[in-house]
Image (cartoon, rainbow, N blue to C red; front, side):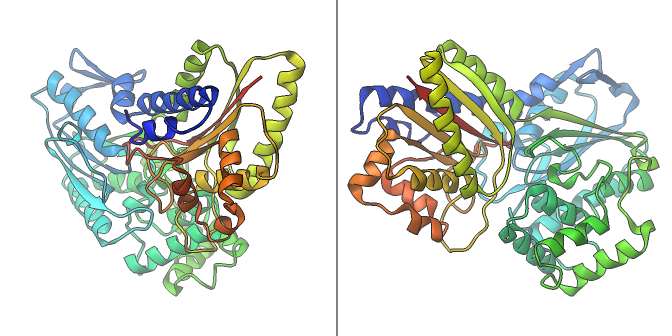
Length: 473
C-alpha cells in the first residue's frame, strides 16, 4: 500500500459501514496518487518513433541535435528525469546527454527512480538555501557551454520556486530566504508569492529562456507538471521558461497588501523599486524574442487524478460531482464552506433519494501561521471542520478527506487526514478541544492523537491537493 498506516485507519473500533467508507476513500486516494506519478505522466506525454522525439503533438528530429542538456528542479523532477532518460537511451542511444536537477533534501529515491547520467543536487524547500544556489549555478555553466545545435530540456514541477534560487544582485541567498519566509507566513496565495519571487530572480519569470537565447540560441523545451490552481504556466515554479504576465508594480502592491514592504531586506526592496521605475528591467513578456525557440508543455496536473477518481467512484455506484477546481483561501475559513456544502448536499440526497454521493474538489488552501505547532493546510481545514461540527449529533454516514498528493504538507510528516461521523463522536468521548489546537496551528498533533493522519512519505508527485466528501443516505 502507498498509505503506510492504511490498516491503522481502517481497523479501528467503528461501525462496519464506516470502515467500508474509509476503505473506499483511502483506496481512491491511492489510485489518485498513482495516476499522477511523474513516470506515468512522462510516458503518457512522450514517445520516440523513427528517431523523432514526440511531445504531445510536436515532433523534434533528434538527428538535428548534437546533445541534450537536462536542467530543472522540483519535487517531481527526479522521477521525470529517470523516466525520460530511459525513453531516450532505449530508443536513441547515439545521442549524448548530460544534466543536473535540484530536488528537495529528504526525498528518498529508490534505485529505479535515480537517473544514470543526470546529476541530482539536493536543496531545501520551501525556503531556498546555498545548496540550491550552487545547483543553479552549475546548470548555468552547462547552458554557457551549450551550442545552437543542442536541445535543452527543462524539467519543471512544483517546489521549483524554492529549489531553483538565483537572486538578482545584490540580493544574497540569506536575504532571499528571509523574503520567502515572510511571504509564507503572511497568508499570501501561491500566485502572489511567485509574483514576488519572479522579480527577485535571475532564473525565474522567463529569465531562463532569456539566458538560453542570449548564450546559444539553442532549442529550449520545458516539460511541466502543475501544482497551482488554474495551471498558469508562469506561476508553476515561478515560470523560468514562460513569459511573465506580472510586473514589478504588482509585486510591490502585494508586499504593501500584506504590510511586508518595509520588512523585507533593503536589497530586495531596492531591486523591486528600481525595476518598477525602469521598465527595461522588467522580466521578458510574450513578445520577447527569447521565446521564439522555446516551447512549454504541460504534461500533468491534478486533472489526471480527478479522472481516475471519477472512474473509481462510478464503479462504486456513487453519484459524482466535481464541485470545484479552484479551491483557495484560508484553510480554517474554507471549513465553513465545506460544512454548508455537506448540509446542503445532505438535503439533496434525502429529497432525490440518492444512495451515495462523492464530491470531489481540487486546489490549494493556505494557512496564516500564528502558533508554533505542527500541521498543514488540509489538516488545519479538517480540524476547523471538526470544531464546527463537534457539538452536533450526526447519525448519517459522511467522510471528508483532504490530502496533499506530494505526501507531506506543512511542517508535518502527513499528507493530510480524514474526518467522519465516528471522529466527531470520538472527539466528544475523549473531550478533545480542537479550538486549542487551531490557535497554535497544531492540527497534526490533534490527528495523531486520533490516529487519523494519513502517512505515505514523499510520493514524488506534485499536483494540486484533493478534497473528497462522501455522503450516504
